[in-house]
Image 1 (cartoon, rainbow, N blue to C red):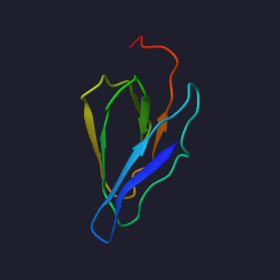
Image 2 (tube, rainbow, N blue to C red):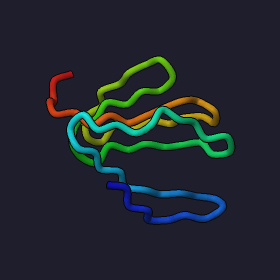
Image 3 (cartoon, helix red, strand yellow):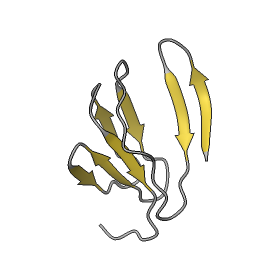
Length: 78
């Protein structure tokens, strides 16, 4: 589920909720930088060729043109 909170020229804010093993498409943004904040759960986050398994409260900054995706996980092991 993707819920858009704000979408204008300067900013896009979304809440993304993924089922276990669901993932977003590997993609990049040509004109926007992206900030990710983990509100709940234990997602996997791929940034370039690196994989991260953040805890609630962790955040990531992704530069323009850097491929990334979010992966829903069923476990909470790191």
